[in-house]
Image (cartoon, rainbow, N blue to C red; front, top):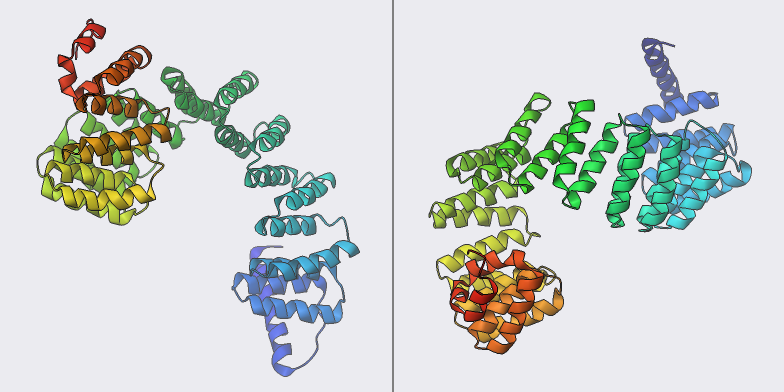
Length: 466
C-alpha cells in the first residue's frame, strides 16, 4: 500500500467517523480501522478524541484486547498510571502472553519506581521469545538494574547481551557506563581488550577503551585507542573530542587544538569546542587568541557559562580585573549551582582586598558546598589574608578530617602550622609529605615561599629546585 493511498484512506476514514458523530448515527468499523483512527488523533495530539474512539470501539468489540492495550498506553502517556495499570491487569487475565502489554506494564512500574516488578515483567516478556524485540527488552532490564543502582547486575545482563549481539553499539556504550558507575575501571579495560581481540574493528569498543584508559591516566594508551577508533570511523567526532582532552591533560596543547579543529570537517563547531580551544591557548599563554576563542564561544551560545568564566580569567591575567569580575558574575548567573565560578570571583575580590565582598560570597558557598574542598581552602585562605591565622588553621584542620585523601589540604595545613609557630607538628608533617607526596611540593612553595628559609625544608629538598 503506497503512502498516497494510505493518506487518502485515512482522510476518508476520519471523515466517515466524524460524519457519524455529527449526525448521531452508528457506523461499523473493524479493529484495524479503529487503530488507524486512534493513530490519526494521537498524531494530531488530540488524545481525548483518541480515547473517545476507543470507547466507541468497546461498544462494538467488548473486552477487545487491542483496544484495551491502546487505551492503557494512551492513559500512561497522559500520566494516568494507576488507571492504565488497572486496564493492563484485566488484559493480562484475558491474554497473559501479550508481549506489548507486558512491556507497557513494565514501563509503568518503572515510572512508579517499582523497578523489581518492572524487571520481573520484562523477563516474562523476554521468555516469550519474540526475536524482534529481544535486544530492546534486554537493554530495558539493564536500565532497570541501573535505576536500582545495581550496576553489578546490569553488567552481568549486558555481558550476555554483548555476547549475543556483539555489533550492538548501545550495549557497548551502556556496559562502559555501568563499569564507570561501579568504579570497576580496571575490569572495564580488561573487558574491552578481550572484546577487541575478537572484534578488532569495533570503533565503539576502541572509544570506550580510550575513555577508561584516560580515567586511570594511561594517556598514551588512551591516545592509541582513540586513534584506532578514528581510523575505523573517521567521522566519529566524540573520539576527536576525547583525544583532544587527553592531549590537554598531557599538556600537549597545540596538538589538542589541532585535534579539536579536525572536527570542523564533520560538524559545525559548537560553543564547547571553541571554549576548549580558548583554554588551550590560555595554557600556551597566548592570551589574545584565548580571548578570541572564548568570545567566539559566547557568540555561538550566549548562555555558555564556561566561556564567560574563560573571558574573566583572561581579563584578570591582563590586569583588567573590574571587567573580569563582570564576566565571572555573568557565569555565576547562568549556572547558580556550580561552586567553581564563585571561587574564581572570591579569588579576584581577594586581589582587590575587598574582604567583606569576598566573605559575602564565600559564606553562603560554604553552607551550600561543604563537600567541596576548594571552598574550604578559599575560606581558610581568606582568614589568613585577613591576618586571622588561628581561624585559617582551625578551618584547615576541620577540612583535613572531612577530606583525608586531599594532598593539597595537607600542604595547606602545613603552611598554617608554620605560620602559627607550631614548628614541631609542622616538621613532623613536612617529613611525611616530602616522603609520601613529593609531587605537591612545587605548589606548596608557590603558596608559602617562606618555607625556603626553614633548615629542615632545605635539608629534605636539597636536590630539588623550586
